[in-house]
Length: 512
Image (cartoon, rainbow, N blue to C red; front, side, top):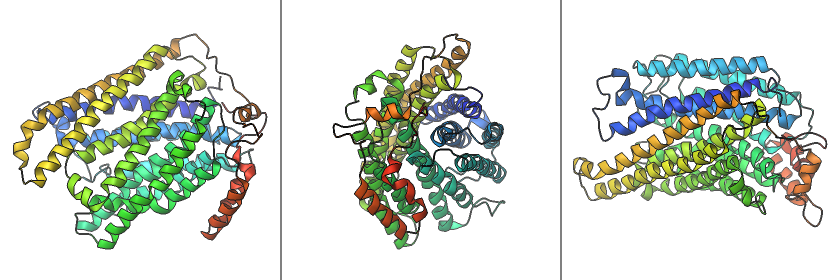
């Protein structure tokens, strides 16, 4: 059992994430119904399509997923640094500020106040509040790291540090915050800025925080060390070097410079380097422990999320090619792709992490293991329904338009798919409600969690091979990578790439 007071800010963020999941999936269901019944709630101004859709998109992005990932980071960093969070008070203040910003932004969107830019609809005042809160969260995290008792930096710490160094800048630039009147530029230039931001929300926010969480939780749940610290660092620098340029593949048919399109296509292909490094690392870490996916529901959520991460990345590389992009880009295919990334990939990760963390920060058992298991299978079913329907619609639309068949002719044919999409979304919304109902019962339930910590020395034993080496130890490669990294001007980071840095935990410290 963890000290509840010690993790109070992480707990506040995680509970907030559950609350926002229920609220914003409700908006998502309303949006889905409007595709085949446009008159649904059409007499209510704040529930018209043009308002409820950005409420849903920004709410899921910043309300559910971001809130959950921040809470996870607040939990992970102290565990890996061997100390407490620098300031739980500041952590709780940032939770309140973050939730106030999300709630205020949602109300303003409902009233029609918007910047009308994809993923950047919040107006300038809300942007300022979110940016300041991000900086405070980053300050709290970096102060915790600076006061660590663990000398070596485990790979999850790298990813979280990189996130809070880069994303505030991405948010400032992408939301054009130096133009408070409009929050935008003019013409095609604004589209370039918009998709620089839109894709880096995924790459330098969700992906980096998500990989940090996977690299932390998977080894701990299966009680085996990470296969290769080196692979994780290769993935880290690959993301840093190539991800910022991929947003232009959303604009391959737009009047932007051709060199920018080429950079986007090439970088989209190179993005498979960190993806393959991650999947290889996770797969080899899981060797001999695949039965844990069946036995442990939180791990099952996380592993399915990791699988969807590979799938959405491969799909993104494929649809970034010029010919496939021209064919697929203007239908429902990219919408399905976006849902695969946000709900399929990071949504499953956050839900699995929530199920894992709640007993450890409250000291109470999950109210119902059966309900948790049902939640997983029914969420998978709902997700497959609406993802498959959107993908099929996208292929039908693209095929028809390539043959000069008009939009109106397709509408009746697509209606059954829109209905299936709404049913799948409703299915997931009901599962979100079930998730939210677990925790009032948890708080009332008197059963104490039986979770026990294990020391790092015991943890390392799970991953030892017959030769006595911890898996992933590769001294020669580590030393060569140090020299490669130093060429790129980041040689200060190299100490944790040494062979001694492969095990982030000191003997005698609890990894739970």
